[in-house]
Length: 389
Image 1 (cartoon, rainbow, N blue to C red):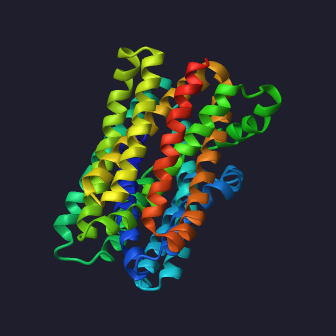
Image 2 (cartoon, one colour):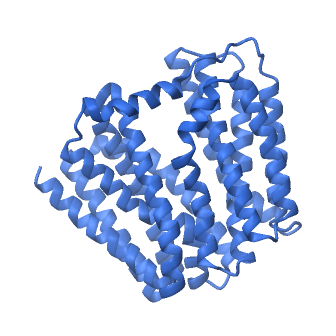
Image 3 (cartoon, helix red, strand yellow):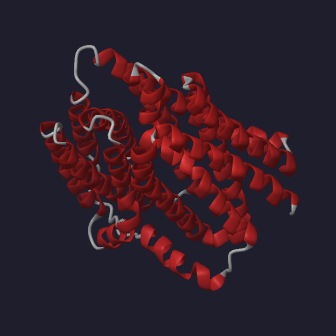
């Protein structure tokens, strides 16, 4: 693949910087807002709204411009946004606005990056190999974030890690700058996907299982959205050392994602369809029970176990749904996944808004109980649904 090293280094620098940024920005908003659930909910919404509102607009805009130049421009603006975030870090509302802007630029960068890869290389095997390498090293980079944070936090405040993300973005910017501009970067794969998504409902009626899987993923996605938006509040409610426990939770959740990816193929190969479905259902139920137990007994290990199980089975169900969608819809797979992703983002946004209000009115324990009951209901429903098929 031409320019493989430059593309690879861009993605690693981008991922590594973003994970420092995503990790510490939650801690910073948590601290500056005095654990205000509304602010944490708005922060979470600033991650999901751009995907719901600006995806198509960004794709259409990028289609009209040179992809490499667009990526360079967005990376440059992101550096300035991160520096501004560092300067005004004590102004919680302004920081959240900057997070929203940075997320829009990040979304556009990801779209441009994917288009650039396809424009540079068309060989399917080479693309798969490149994507696999990026995934492996990105996960490894994410696992390094928490240990590095613990080493540096003794010398620096959390705010400095926002500036560190800006520095990593400069290196990512240099990586893209080293790519030759001779390539046309004219293909618009994103636009093709959008056009397909606009016709899927005319060509195929979603069957019951497809609709149910999307609803199930969205409903269980509430637990993941809770973790991303209010996990730190739950940890603060249970633990006396919020920062360390939150760092441990993020590290363990990253390991959980790695485990889920490694075991999903084993689960598919070793277990028949019914056994696999029952295993997933049992894990959904167990996660719900543990979430309720963590809220009632204020035990960190129970909460962490619940979050880990939830993350593992969520990814398993995603893979299960993906396999079914690939068989059912084939060439229109991206259209179905687009609907699924919009449903998940919608749930995450609803969790950010409604969750913040409920936590302020009823307290974090009440919301944890609601999340647990949600998992139990849909775990039982999934068992009954599969029995009927």
